[in-house]
Image (cartoon, rainbow, N blue to C red; front, side, top):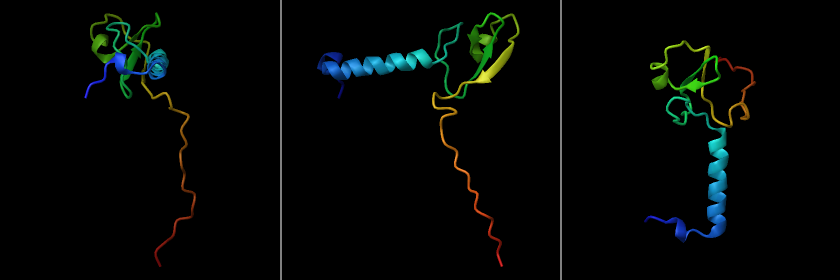
Length: 91
């Protein structure tokens, strides 16, 4: 079943637009093809500050200054559980 925008209540539509706007503002985009970078994708930064995806990097004549992996918005904010119990040896 498809739902058209006309079927959505005003509040629901406003919340959807707001959340999509928030997400779009935090996602990196390639300066070559304007594609949104995927989580886990390797991206390349140039002296000018431009960021390019791996596909556009091959079309670029100059070498990148650095590269990094795209992380989720929650990266660094999650809790890592460590098991600090002593190791039990078999008798």
